[in-house]
Length: 235
Image (tube, rainbow, N blue to C red; front, side, top):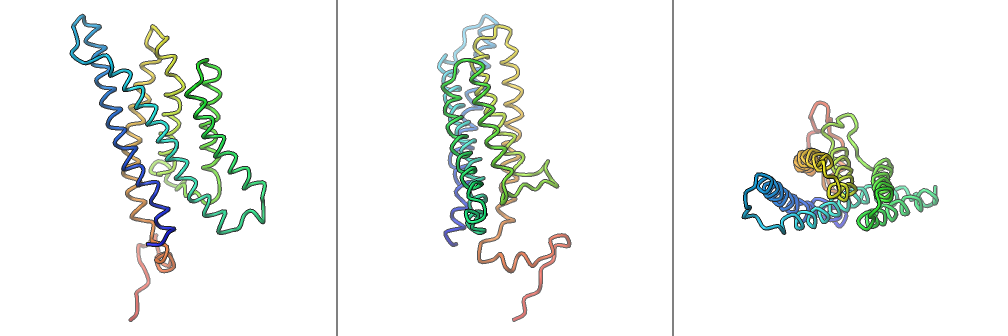
């Protein structure tokens, strides 16, 4: 493997080592938090410690940061490769600077989202973070598989990231809402996000199988993908 192949593995490696274990932890704490709440509402003394709610919130914040960070890393590789391959700075320096600024703005907006308390600012920073991901995803070099958007690693990943960002934005509303409507919204959206993460595991594995090593590309891309045939090698 060459260095370019190792760089491509950074995104899936972090997902396996960091993000997916966090998903299991967050889901476990979420289940315990809900069970403790239901037991207390029923008038029973729960054996589940009160700290599970705080732990769920803490690990949920880590998961959101990890998911958004993974999305940025996954977008940075193809965008950066496209810029270097086409020497885009010679053709449109403004576009290169714009892309770099969007990366920075997205990261800063996510950091400010965690610190924002008022609903207006939470909405603004959540919107800026989500918009940054979408804008970066529209850049040349990003493989989107738009013809199969329902089975696209890109579209599923962006959707999961946006749901996680929204979940962070409504945390304060969950604590303040006595009707528990925001809590119900949080549960429904994160159940959807969990299904999307499962899809990410499957589509990510598929894409790793489909992407050839850098030294194999010249031969692999001669194949007829529609008819699933490749030119025969003559010794």
